[in-house]
Amino acid sequence: MTIGRFITFEGGEGAGKTTQIARLVRVLRARGVEVVQTREPGGSPSAEAVRDLLLHADHGWEPLSEALLHYAARCEHLTATIRPALARGAWVVCDRFSDSTRAYQGFGLGLDIGTLEALEHMVVGSTRPDLTLILDLPPEVGLGRATGRKAAADRYERMSETFHSRLREGFLAIAARAPERCAVIDAEPGEEQVAEAVFRAVRERLGGPAAA
Image 1 (cartoon, rainbow, N blue to C red):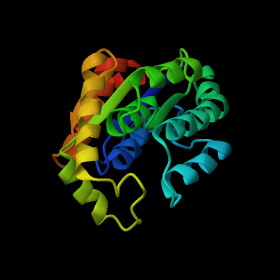
Image 2 (cartoon, rainbow, N blue to C red):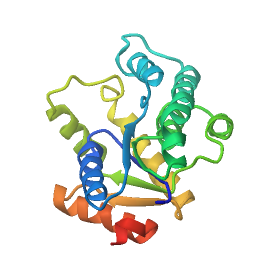
Image 3 (cartoon, rainbow, N blue to C red):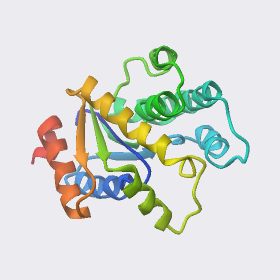
Image 4 (cartoon, one colour):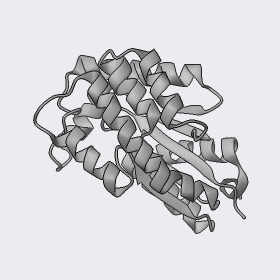
């Protein structure tokens, strides 16, 4: 049986996560891997309901309230989707996970990192990613890309460029703290170049079907 692997994609707005996730999932499935493609906040019916509150409600949230909502959704997601998939040997590819909460609510909104670490310990436990791919680019580039999409901007995309600069700093700090888990991918080049860098990181870090 294939050993279950947990891959997360992180990065600021407009970094191209959706595109690169879809490409990686196609390659893995073509090699016979069962892949569960999912996202946060969301990934299960109850977590998707929380996602709508977080991203599209007109009112704001206190940073701690936001973090608690994210972790409530994450608890549901882990229980309903991620852990069962890993247990049966599937690879889980997730658009955002707990690093995003640390970056957005911690570095971005100033919530105490110790509080977030306590929540992560309680909710995530040992179900941590085997590999985290951080798609990195200047915030002004990412926001320009996000603005060019047809979909209406969500609450985070409408925040200031200063906020998004703190996000980038946060993701890079997370990568520096956990180099054995995180790979920083330059997201400025074209889609093909970024895809090559993504798959190279998966192949080198995880092997298995990805190395075939």
